Amino acid sequence: MERAAPPAALGPGLGAALMESPPSCLRSGSVKVHLKKWSIWDKFYNLGTEMRMSKRGRFMFPYCEYSVWGLEPAKNYIMAMDISPVDSYRYRYNGSKWQLSGKATPHVMGRLYFHPKGSVPGREWMLAPLSFARLRLTNCPAAAEGHAILHSMHRYIPQLHIIVADGVAPRPSLDDPRVYTFVFQQTEFFAVTKYENKFIRQLKHFYNPYGTALRDVKGSKQVTGA
Amino acid sequence: MERAAPPAALGPGLGAALMESPPSCLRSGSVKVHLKKWSIWDKFYNLGTEMRMSKRGRFMFPYCEYSVWGLEPAKNYIMAMDISPVDSYRYRYNGSKWQLSGKATPHVMGRLYFHPKGSVPGREWMLAPLSFARLRLTNCPAAAEGHAILHSMHRYIPQLHIIVADGVAPRPSLDDPRVYTFVFQQTEFFAVTKYENKFIRQLKHFYNPYGTALRDVKGSKQVTGA
DNA sequence: GACTTCACACCTAGGTGCTAAGTT
DNA sequence: AACTTAGCACCTAGGTGTGAAGTC
Image 1: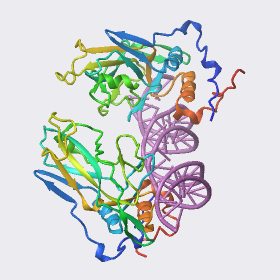
Image 2 (image 1 turned 90 degrees about the vertical axis):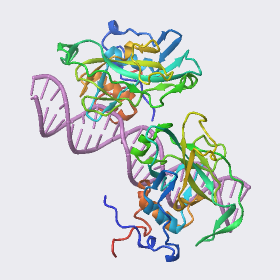
Image 3 (image 1 turned 135 degrees about the horizontal axis):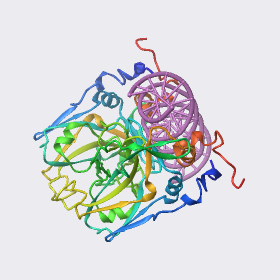
Image 4 (image 1 turned 60 degrees about the vertical axis):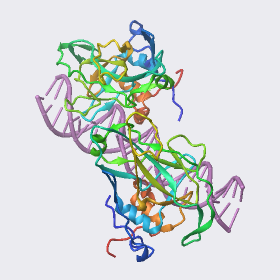
């Protein structure tokens, strides 16, 4: 099935003022990281990305995927992510935009999601995209390891940590100089249990392969160039 | 959907003479290994197990799954399998049974399938079943790593190798005394590109969750106790 | 003739947002 | 009223054996 152009409303979106594009490529020391599918991330970012959670844990869409350069080929690295609070506020959606709604519920700290490949030489990390597609978001405080525990109606941003695995400490402090951290502005999102912004809903339908059931209903499909 | 009893023809099968049950539990030094779902393996074994292959690689059914005891909890182990020729003959199916049909095509040697978990402490290996459900069989000599390369119409048996990973050699020789090898007689099979024995076909339909499409056709379903 | 490959329909498995019902 | 949960239909993804077509 051919994919039509995304709904026209989703292009210019909420107005040109928001149409900025944060850098999709960051450097830390000799290590360079590029955010893949940045143009899709940008589309969501400009509308105010929302990510649904559930008790069981839910994948992110878009998900975090990177290309990595500048690692030492023979040295081993561990790749980890965490989802960090952006600020200390709680938010609400008033029907058309997000607004502050009091102080944040304290963050459930310290959970890292380690890439399942484990400790792998830099050579191999640089060969293929580094994907965290299977990181799950949950609002259940008792969730299994490997799930990120978030609060609904709060604002978060994913952080990538590239950790030199020299065998000293398997899970070093993130302040350790052997940890390189990368944060891409356009991956910021609001955690929700149901989508609030209908344009976000439409973008999800359109780009997420599992969301196509609803791609053609309620005017979310439009003809190219119409 | 409830599962009816397996077809009556598949019980007594080819006759009582074949109805032996090889041990489902083996020991090597202090290490003990139990073959899971041995009663299903036995049913196939008594009819002459066949495993289909394809170019792209195909899962085994039944697949090899074990429980392990007697490892040193803190020591690391690597789990590997290979599919070994049982003899040096080629076979053919004459419509009712397998018979010799000349000398074997030389085996494509030395390929090991390593359990994807990698090097893990004995404690953890003993906690959960050790499954090789995702080992693929192929007849394509150029297949990707992790596929077992076999010849059709030849007879094979899977071997489990438990390898002490003391960091000396990542992929030691199988003659190394730090390698414990286990071979369960009832996992022997004929490699085929299409099933020959129709009773094997029926057993596969019956037990493989993906084969249920054909469970109810051509008399493969029978009523319990009829 | 004997064996292999391919396209197919059918199934399991599991992710998706929806709606309705439940909770606070 | 605001937010969360559970069940649903719908989809993708991919394993299954079949039967027809292809190969040797």
